Length: 393
Image 1 (cartoon, rainbow, N blue to C red):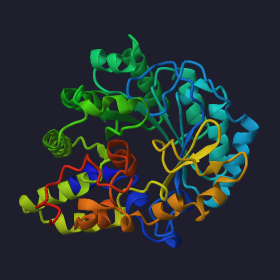
Image 2: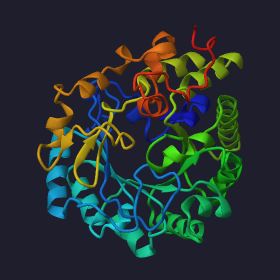
Image 3: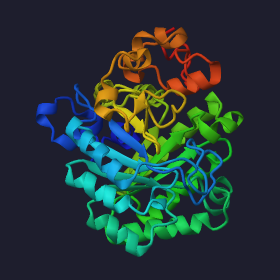
Image 4: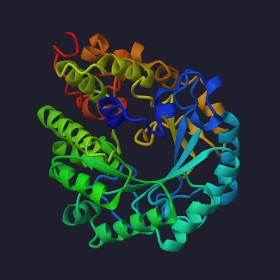
C-alpha cells in the first residue's frame, strides 16, 4: 500500500506504524507488519460463497460454496496458531465473509487472542444488527468494495440494487461506530468514477479509501484488456493526489491509499521533487521503510479449504494446508523454492526491474501480474508505468 495522504500531505494516520514502524521492541503486538522482523498480515478467504457475481473477483466466488470450508472449530485452531506466531492482523474475506454465520464468532475469537480483526465485504449484508454485533466484538475495520456510483457499480457487481444495499451497509457501520473504508478497483471501465467516489467519501464522511490497481487473477484475468495504459495510470494517480490534497487543504483530510502497484511510491516522490516540495527527502525515507511489495513475506493468504498462498491473488501455487500443518510452519519452511525466493525477491527479478534504481523501494512490484502477463513470475511487472529515464536506465 502507498499512503498518498501520508506521503503527499504529511498527515498522521492510524496505520503509520504498520507501514513505517521499524523496531518490534518499540511496537505493540498488533503493529508489527512492517517491523524489520515482520510477521504477515493474513488475508483469510473464509468462504467462496457470495451473494454477488463481480466481474473482477479474484476468488471467482460462487453463489453457494462448492468446496469444503474449515469448520468453526478448525478455524479457531488456525487462529490460535496465527496469534502464537505473531500475525498482527487477520483480514476476513471471501467470497463474502458475512455469508458465513460464524464470522462474528471468529472475529471475536481473533480479537480475544490479541490480533486485529478486519473484514473485506461488499457491504450488502451489513444490517444494523450485524453492524452492532461487529462493533461489540471489537472488529477494527470494515472495508466495503465500491467500483463506482450506482449504475457502474451494479454493472461490476452484476446485480441491480447492489450499490444501494452497500450504501445502507456503510451507513449502518458508521452509525454503530465502526471504522469504514472504501475499496475501489481501477480499470478503463470506471476510471471516470474516481471523482464521484471522492465526492461520496466527503458527503458520507467516510474516513478512508483504497484505490486498487487491477491484478490479473481469477475473473480479473478477463479484464486485462481493460487495464489502464501507462499514460492513463499516471493521469489517475495524479487525480488521486490532487483530490487528496484538495480535501486536506479544505480541512477535511481522509486516509487515501493506492494498492497493488508500488510504482506509485516513486511516482509521488518524483512529482514532489518537480514541485520542489521540502518534504520530498522525508518521503523518500518513508518509502524505504515501506519496502514495497510484500507477497510471501509481510502478507499471506489462507483459502476457504485451508490452502496457504503468498497473497490472495496467487492461487495456483499452494505452500501447504493448515489442516495438515500449522500456518506458522508452512510460512517459515524454506524448503519450498518459491517461498524462499519470495522472502528476498529483489535478488531474482529480471529485465528493467533488476536495473531499476527504485528496486529497494518497490521490491519488484507484483509478481502475480508479471506471471499472468508473461508466463515468467520474475519478469518485469507490465503495470509499472515509470519511464526508463525515471527508473535510471
